[in-house]
Structures are given as C-alpha cells and as structure tokens.
Amino acid sequence: MALLSAIGAAALVYAGIMGRGLSTGHPEPDIAVAVVMFSVAALCLAMLRRAVIQLRSGSLRLDEIGFELAGCRRERYLWREVGDFRPALGRGSVPVGFRVGPPKNDADALLNLRFLGGRDVWLPDNYAYRSEELAQLMADWQTRAIEH
Image (cartoon, rainbow, N blue to C red; front, side):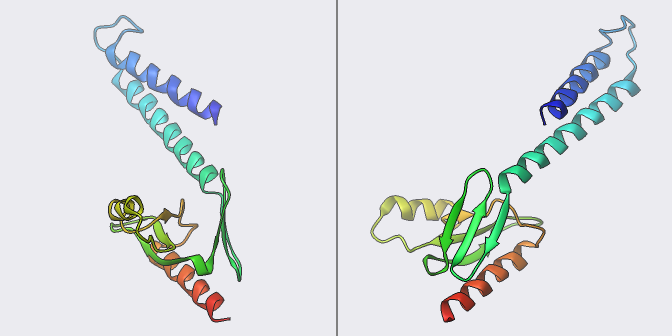
C-alpha cells in the first residue's frame, strides 16, 4: 500500500509540474502527459482507497448465537441484543445499520440515534450483497436464531 500511495503521489506531483510547464521550461506545457499522469495518480488513489476499505471491513461471520465483525477491530454481537437491520437512506451501495438494545432513559444515546439514522452501529461493508439483501439476510438469521 505504501508503494501504491508513493506512485500515486509522484504521478500527481509530476502532473502538476508538467501542467505548469515548470519542468521543461517551455511556455506551452505538454498537457497530454500531464493528463495521463493525473489519471495514473487518480487510479492509484482509488485503488489505495479500496484496499483500505477492504482491510478495514474484514469479514462477517454469522452463527446461531450471533455474528462477528472481524477486521481491524473485532466485535461480537448476540442476536437477542440486536435488531432492526436496515440500509441507510440513499442510492447505490449504502451501509446497513442495526440497533443494539433499546436506549432506556439515556439522553445521549437517544440523541445519537436521532443523528445516526436511528441506528447504533453500521456494518463496515456490504460483503458483495446489495444493501437490502444484506439487511434481509441479517434479519432472517436473527429470526431463526431467536425462534430456536
């Protein structure tokens, strides 16, 4: 990742220099080279962003007791303590959130719920599912686990 970000930063700097014509001393810079280098920089930064998201999201493991978010931080939730799985409002790939226990007489928790879309926790990734499908999958697993 460090190499990728270094290549992206170097390409971006070179594109800036070429765009101003400072490296060659010509009054008319080579715009085509600057555009190509800027494109390389943008591609490297996009790949770096995706790599960071992938490392951060890790994996989602479901079982009969609950589920575990494994990534840079591990978190375990029990099915009986969570609920109300819903995707965020929006289009495209939006995160899926859920509630962890009802906040009882806790003004800070109620205020956080109001500003976080009514959810305590958001899943860090959709794990190759559409948001609605993942929310339904989580709700189905919870229903089966609680019924047994």
